[in-house]
Image 1: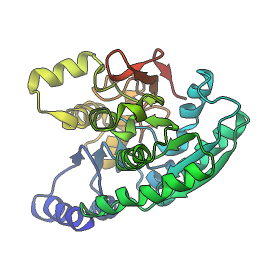
Image 2 (image 1 turned 180 degrees about the horizontal axis):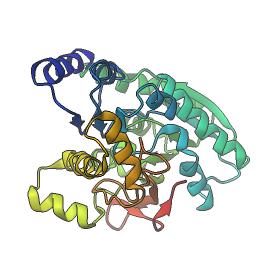
Image 3 (image 1 turned 120 degrees about the vertical axis):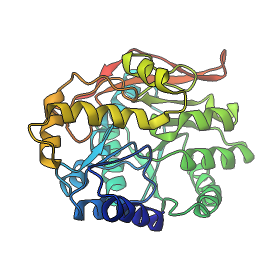
Length: 313
Protein backbone atom coordinates (compact mmCIF):
# COMPACT_ATOMS: atom_id res chain seq x y z
CA UNK A 1 0.00 0.00 0.00
CA UNK A 2 2.86 2.38 0.78
CA UNK A 3 4.36 1.83 -2.67
CA UNK A 4 0.99 2.48 -4.32
CA UNK A 5 0.58 5.65 -2.27
CA UNK A 6 4.03 6.95 -3.21
CA UNK A 7 3.41 6.29 -6.90
CA UNK A 8 0.03 8.02 -6.69
CA UNK A 9 1.52 11.07 -5.03
CA UNK A 10 4.27 11.32 -7.64
CA UNK A 11 1.74 11.11 -10.47
CA UNK A 12 -0.44 13.85 -9.00
CA UNK A 13 2.25 16.26 -7.84
CA UNK A 14 5.02 15.80 -10.38
CA UNK A 15 3.21 14.75 -13.56
CA UNK A 16 -0.14 16.53 -13.32
CA UNK A 17 0.28 19.21 -10.60
CA UNK A 18 -3.22 18.85 -9.19
CA UNK A 19 -4.76 21.31 -6.72
CA UNK A 20 -6.15 18.63 -4.38
CA UNK A 21 -6.46 14.86 -4.13
CA UNK A 22 -9.66 12.97 -3.33
CA UNK A 23 -9.89 9.33 -2.34
CA UNK A 24 -12.66 7.08 -1.00
CA UNK A 25 -10.19 5.11 1.13
CA UNK A 26 -6.65 5.40 2.48
CA UNK A 27 -4.91 2.07 2.96
CA UNK A 28 -1.41 3.27 3.78
CA UNK A 29 -0.79 5.03 7.07
CA UNK A 30 1.06 8.23 6.23
CA UNK A 31 2.93 7.81 2.95
CA UNK A 32 0.35 9.55 0.79
CA UNK A 33 -0.28 12.48 3.14
CA UNK A 34 3.35 13.15 3.99
CA UNK A 35 4.24 13.14 0.28
CA UNK A 36 1.34 15.41 -0.66
CA UNK A 37 2.24 17.74 2.18
CA UNK A 38 5.73 18.20 0.77
CA UNK A 39 4.01 19.57 -2.35
CA UNK A 40 1.43 21.56 -0.34
CA UNK A 41 -1.42 19.55 -1.85
CA UNK A 42 -4.62 19.01 0.21
CA UNK A 43 -6.09 15.52 0.66
CA UNK A 44 -9.83 14.94 1.15
CA UNK A 45 -10.44 11.36 2.12
CA UNK A 46 -12.83 8.79 3.42
CA UNK A 47 -10.47 6.49 5.25
CA UNK A 48 -10.41 2.98 6.66
CA UNK A 49 -7.89 4.41 9.12
CA UNK A 50 -8.88 6.25 12.29
CA UNK A 51 -6.81 9.39 12.69
CA UNK A 52 -6.76 11.92 15.50
CA UNK A 53 -6.35 15.66 15.83
CA UNK A 54 -2.65 15.35 16.64
CA UNK A 55 -2.14 13.65 13.28
CA UNK A 56 -4.13 16.32 11.45
CA UNK A 57 -2.16 19.06 13.18
CA UNK A 58 0.94 17.82 11.38
CA UNK A 59 -0.73 18.89 8.13
CA UNK A 60 -2.63 22.13 8.87
CA UNK A 61 -5.10 22.92 6.13
CA UNK A 62 -4.07 19.91 4.08
CA UNK A 63 -5.77 16.83 5.57
CA UNK A 64 -9.55 16.35 5.75
CA UNK A 65 -11.45 13.28 6.90
CA UNK A 66 -14.56 13.97 4.90
CA UNK A 67 -17.30 12.07 6.72
CA UNK A 68 -15.73 10.28 9.67
CA UNK A 69 -14.86 11.28 13.21
CA UNK A 70 -11.31 11.33 14.55
CA UNK A 71 -10.65 8.64 17.14
CA UNK A 72 -10.04 11.10 19.95
CA UNK A 73 -13.71 12.08 19.61
CA UNK A 74 -15.03 8.56 20.11
CA UNK A 75 -16.33 8.85 23.68
CA UNK A 76 -19.91 9.26 22.31
CA UNK A 77 -19.53 5.78 20.77
CA UNK A 78 -19.44 4.29 24.26
CA UNK A 79 -21.77 6.86 25.86
CA UNK A 80 -24.52 6.05 23.36
CA UNK A 81 -24.27 2.30 24.01
CA UNK A 82 -24.27 2.82 27.77
CA UNK A 83 -27.39 4.98 27.42
CA UNK A 84 -29.01 2.00 25.67
CA UNK A 85 -28.01 -0.26 28.59
CA UNK A 86 -25.91 -2.30 26.22
CA UNK A 87 -23.24 -3.16 28.80
CA UNK A 88 -24.61 -5.02 31.85
CA UNK A 89 -22.84 -4.91 35.20
CA UNK A 90 -21.53 -8.39 34.42
CA UNK A 91 -19.82 -7.24 31.20
CA UNK A 92 -16.23 -8.44 30.87
CA UNK A 93 -14.81 -6.27 28.12
CA UNK A 94 -12.00 -6.82 25.63
CA UNK A 95 -10.72 -4.23 23.17
CA UNK A 96 -9.06 -4.88 19.81
CA UNK A 97 -7.30 -1.95 18.17
CA UNK A 98 -4.55 -1.16 15.70
CA UNK A 99 -0.96 -0.30 16.57
CA UNK A 100 -0.50 3.12 14.97
CA UNK A 101 -0.25 6.07 17.40
CA UNK A 102 -3.72 7.27 16.41
CA UNK A 103 -5.14 3.82 17.17
CA UNK A 104 -3.66 4.01 20.65
CA UNK A 105 -5.36 7.37 21.17
CA UNK A 106 -8.71 6.01 19.97
CA UNK A 107 -8.30 2.93 22.16
CA UNK A 108 -7.54 5.05 25.22
CA UNK A 109 -10.53 7.28 24.46
CA UNK A 110 -12.75 4.19 24.41
CA UNK A 111 -11.19 2.84 27.60
CA UNK A 112 -11.60 6.15 29.41
CA UNK A 113 -15.23 6.43 28.32
CA UNK A 114 -15.96 2.95 29.68
CA UNK A 115 -14.18 3.78 32.92
CA UNK A 116 -16.28 6.92 33.32
CA UNK A 117 -19.35 4.66 33.37
CA UNK A 118 -17.85 2.18 35.82
CA UNK A 119 -16.60 -0.41 33.33
CA UNK A 120 -13.05 -1.71 33.05
CA UNK A 121 -11.37 -3.19 29.99
CA UNK A 122 -10.03 -6.56 31.06
CA UNK A 123 -7.71 -7.04 28.08
CA UNK A 124 -6.56 -4.96 25.12
CA UNK A 125 -4.91 -6.40 22.04
CA UNK A 126 -3.04 -4.13 19.64
CA UNK A 127 -2.68 -5.72 16.23
CA UNK A 128 -0.74 -4.54 13.19
CA UNK A 129 -3.08 -3.50 10.41
CA UNK A 130 -2.59 -5.01 6.99
CA UNK A 131 0.03 -3.16 4.93
CA UNK A 132 -0.66 -5.11 1.72
CA UNK A 133 -3.33 -7.40 0.33
CA UNK A 134 -1.48 -10.60 1.35
CA UNK A 135 -1.37 -9.27 4.92
CA UNK A 136 -5.13 -9.71 5.18
CA UNK A 137 -4.72 -13.48 5.47
CA UNK A 138 -2.20 -13.00 8.28
CA UNK A 139 -4.51 -10.69 10.21
CA UNK A 140 -7.40 -13.14 9.82
CA UNK A 141 -5.29 -16.05 11.07
CA UNK A 142 -4.10 -14.03 14.06
CA UNK A 143 -7.69 -13.60 15.21
CA UNK A 144 -7.83 -17.31 16.04
CA UNK A 145 -5.39 -16.92 18.92
CA UNK A 146 -6.97 -13.64 20.06
CA UNK A 147 -10.45 -15.10 20.35
CA UNK A 148 -9.05 -18.09 22.26
CA UNK A 149 -7.35 -15.67 24.63
CA UNK A 150 -10.51 -13.61 25.12
CA UNK A 151 -12.66 -16.72 25.54
CA UNK A 152 -10.33 -18.11 28.23
CA UNK A 153 -10.49 -14.77 30.06
CA UNK A 154 -14.28 -14.87 30.18
CA UNK A 155 -14.64 -11.81 27.96
CA UNK A 156 -18.23 -11.52 26.80
CA UNK A 157 -18.11 -8.05 25.21
CA UNK A 158 -15.61 -7.18 22.48
CA UNK A 159 -15.11 -3.60 21.32
CA UNK A 160 -13.48 -3.05 17.92
CA UNK A 161 -11.59 0.10 17.05
CA UNK A 162 -10.77 -1.11 13.51
CA UNK A 163 -12.66 -2.76 10.70
CA UNK A 164 -13.67 -4.71 8.76
CA UNK A 165 -10.85 -7.28 8.83
CA UNK A 166 -10.49 -7.26 12.62
CA UNK A 167 -14.18 -7.87 13.53
CA UNK A 168 -14.87 -10.20 10.63
CA UNK A 169 -11.79 -12.31 11.34
CA UNK A 170 -12.66 -12.49 15.03
CA UNK A 171 -16.26 -13.50 14.29
CA UNK A 172 -15.19 -16.29 11.94
CA UNK A 173 -12.70 -17.63 14.49
CA UNK A 174 -15.18 -17.32 17.37
CA UNK A 175 -17.92 -19.07 15.43
CA UNK A 176 -15.66 -22.05 14.78
CA UNK A 177 -15.20 -22.40 18.55
CA UNK A 178 -18.83 -21.83 19.53
CA UNK A 179 -17.91 -18.53 21.19
CA UNK A 180 -20.60 -15.83 20.93
CA UNK A 181 -19.65 -12.61 22.73
CA UNK A 182 -21.39 -9.29 22.17
CA UNK A 183 -19.72 -6.90 19.73
CA UNK A 184 -19.50 -3.11 19.81
CA UNK A 185 -18.95 -1.72 16.32
CA UNK A 186 -18.98 1.54 14.40
CA UNK A 187 -19.62 2.24 10.72
CA UNK A 188 -15.81 2.26 10.32
CA UNK A 189 -16.11 -1.54 10.39
CA UNK A 190 -17.69 -1.68 6.90
CA UNK A 191 -21.03 -2.92 8.20
CA UNK A 192 -22.16 -3.94 4.73
CA UNK A 193 -19.33 -6.45 4.45
CA UNK A 194 -19.95 -7.84 7.92
CA UNK A 195 -23.70 -8.05 7.36
CA UNK A 196 -23.22 -9.95 4.11
CA UNK A 197 -20.46 -12.30 5.24
CA UNK A 198 -20.44 -12.90 8.99
CA UNK A 199 -22.57 -15.57 10.65
CA UNK A 200 -25.88 -14.31 12.01
CA UNK A 201 -25.06 -16.20 15.22
CA UNK A 202 -22.25 -13.67 15.66
CA UNK A 203 -23.95 -10.53 14.36
CA UNK A 204 -27.08 -11.07 16.47
CA UNK A 205 -25.04 -9.89 19.45
CA UNK A 206 -23.67 -6.80 17.71
CA UNK A 207 -24.58 -3.17 18.31
CA UNK A 208 -22.92 0.18 17.86
CA UNK A 209 -23.11 3.55 16.20
CA UNK A 210 -23.01 4.67 12.60
CA UNK A 211 -21.66 8.03 11.47
CA UNK A 212 -23.52 7.62 8.17
CA UNK A 213 -26.23 5.16 7.21
CA UNK A 214 -26.65 1.40 7.39
CA UNK A 215 -26.24 -1.05 4.49
CA UNK A 216 -29.93 -1.98 4.40
CA UNK A 217 -31.17 1.40 5.60
CA UNK A 218 -29.05 4.05 3.90
CA UNK A 219 -29.38 7.70 4.75
CA UNK A 220 -31.35 9.85 2.30
CA UNK A 221 -30.86 13.59 1.90
CA UNK A 222 -30.42 16.14 -0.88
CA UNK A 223 -26.75 15.16 -1.29
CA UNK A 224 -27.41 11.44 -1.64
CA UNK A 225 -30.12 12.16 -4.19
CA UNK A 226 -27.76 14.38 -6.17
CA UNK A 227 -25.01 11.77 -6.14
CA UNK A 228 -27.37 9.03 -7.26
CA UNK A 229 -28.73 11.23 -10.04
CA UNK A 230 -25.19 11.63 -11.39
CA UNK A 231 -24.35 7.93 -11.27
CA UNK A 232 -25.15 4.85 -9.25
CA UNK A 233 -21.42 4.15 -9.22
CA UNK A 234 -20.12 7.38 -7.69
CA UNK A 235 -19.54 5.56 -4.40
CA UNK A 236 -17.38 7.42 -1.94
CA UNK A 237 -16.07 9.94 -4.49
CA UNK A 238 -19.17 12.12 -4.54
CA UNK A 239 -18.85 13.27 -0.93
CA UNK A 240 -15.28 14.58 -1.22
CA UNK A 241 -16.13 16.25 -4.55
CA UNK A 242 -19.13 18.06 -3.11
CA UNK A 243 -17.14 19.13 -0.07
CA UNK A 244 -14.25 20.41 -2.19
CA UNK A 245 -16.65 22.44 -4.32
CA UNK A 246 -18.50 23.87 -1.31
CA UNK A 247 -15.31 24.84 0.53
CA UNK A 248 -13.71 26.32 -2.61
CA UNK A 249 -16.73 28.59 -3.12
CA UNK A 250 -16.22 30.01 0.36
CA UNK A 251 -12.44 30.24 0.17
CA UNK A 252 -11.17 33.85 0.21
CA UNK A 253 -8.38 32.75 -2.13
CA UNK A 254 -8.07 29.49 -4.02
CA UNK A 255 -5.01 27.97 -2.39
CA UNK A 256 -4.62 25.42 0.41
CA UNK A 257 -4.78 28.09 3.12
CA UNK A 258 -7.90 29.59 1.58
CA UNK A 259 -9.44 26.13 1.27
CA UNK A 260 -9.03 25.66 5.02
CA UNK A 261 -10.80 28.95 5.64
CA UNK A 262 -13.54 27.85 3.27
CA UNK A 263 -13.95 24.64 5.25
CA UNK A 264 -14.38 26.53 8.51
CA UNK A 265 -16.87 28.88 6.85
CA UNK A 266 -19.15 25.94 6.02
CA UNK A 267 -20.06 25.64 9.70
CA UNK A 268 -22.97 23.21 9.94
CA UNK A 269 -24.39 24.05 6.54
CA UNK A 270 -22.78 21.33 4.44
CA UNK A 271 -25.12 18.45 3.59
CA UNK A 272 -23.01 15.34 3.09
CA UNK A 273 -23.96 12.12 1.31
CA UNK A 274 -21.78 10.27 3.82
CA UNK A 275 -22.30 11.96 7.20
CA UNK A 276 -25.50 12.23 9.20
CA UNK A 277 -24.52 15.71 10.37
CA UNK A 278 -21.51 17.95 9.77
CA UNK A 279 -19.79 20.70 11.71
CA UNK A 280 -16.73 22.19 10.02
CA UNK A 281 -16.71 25.24 12.28
CA UNK A 282 -15.82 23.21 15.36
CA UNK A 283 -13.84 20.44 13.67
CA UNK A 284 -12.89 21.64 10.22
CA UNK A 285 -10.60 18.68 9.48
CA UNK A 286 -13.09 15.98 10.49
CA UNK A 287 -16.49 17.44 9.89
CA UNK A 288 -18.58 14.44 10.88
CA UNK A 289 -20.90 15.49 13.69
CA UNK A 290 -23.74 12.97 13.87
CA UNK A 291 -24.36 9.37 14.87
CA UNK A 292 -27.17 6.85 15.26
CA UNK A 293 -27.23 3.72 17.37
CA UNK A 294 -27.93 0.40 15.69
CA UNK A 295 -28.30 -3.26 16.51
CA UNK A 296 -28.96 -6.53 14.75
CA UNK A 297 -32.54 -6.99 13.52
CA UNK A 298 -33.44 -10.65 13.09
CA UNK A 299 -36.59 -9.78 11.15
CA UNK A 300 -34.67 -8.26 8.24
CA UNK A 301 -31.44 -10.18 8.92
CA UNK A 302 -29.67 -6.85 8.91
CA UNK A 303 -28.40 -4.01 11.04
CA UNK A 304 -31.18 -1.58 11.91
CA UNK A 305 -31.42 1.71 13.78
CA UNK A 306 -32.23 1.68 17.47
CA UNK A 307 -32.35 5.44 17.92
CA UNK A 308 -32.50 8.79 16.18
CA UNK A 309 -29.68 11.05 15.03
CA UNK A 310 -27.55 12.47 17.83
CA UNK A 311 -25.07 15.31 17.48
CA UNK A 312 -21.45 14.55 18.38
CA UNK A 313 -19.79 17.47 20.17
